[in-house]
Length: 421
Image (cartoon, rainbow, N blue to C red):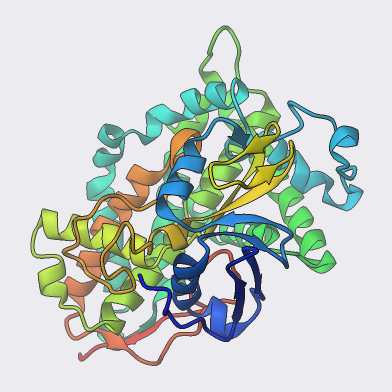
């Protein structure tokens, strides 16, 4: 891409110093970050983000490489003390939230990560996930049966939320009727992952964490008395190297699977429907056969990724190839969604091209923390999207949807659709 790419007003770039100023609360940016990403690729794909006070990376090769680089990790206190890093002590008002994070697969490094992931991974391999196809398809049809004759629907709460939370709850062996509670706790907790959460957000997330933890403690106790054929029972009863998961590990893992198992998929499903309708793509061509469907799904995840940032710590003093020096404990930000539109990797990257065959996106991450639920997310999209467009011919946007002010997640506030009946 030539350096003549227009720099949108929402971002200021100094390519010489590689300093960038960008307000994530600016609607021009969070509603559509792609023009800002294009400017970064043209001028400085590795940059120091002034407002966040750390280095970020947007280029595909660098993001993909840093996701796999074992000199970086998701935790730092296993190799350094708080005093050494000048890191503040945990805040008492986040005690319950921090307790869940302490044993989260997403935040651990080996050997703890290896032990936990090995116990969980069996349920998420492709051959296991494929067995869910009839159930997911039946669920999608059953939901559409409920609104097909109405001629209009708000898709996120009616369809996009229901499918993933129902599937992951059934996999874990948690009552499906508790789905609304699970969604509420999840929504309140994930607000903590946005930049600079308010005190109100922190208090609410901590309260949700406490409620979620208490709920799961009761579920786990019941399964110890009456085991089932489900993932939670499997995690309770399975040993590795003579050890079983503690209650704290069980609860953290279940929370992560429930939250990650539907938060990202909800956004991705909404983003995908929006992209298809907004670009005027033909559903008949997009879902003509399995190959076309799979390429369409991958392109929606490249073009309209739900998660835009993944952060890691430098585990030692590091100098990268481009001269960026990092100290032990420094955080870096990897712009997954920006890497997905790198013109050095993808031709015409800002266009939605479902026939694209130019390599894999990084929406699921890479390396040690590659998304464990990727096979499940892909299957849910592969079934729910074609069924939706097949059942509702003439589907179109009722109005331009509003994008959530929630960077670094990218999703819609609501998605109102209409179709002829």
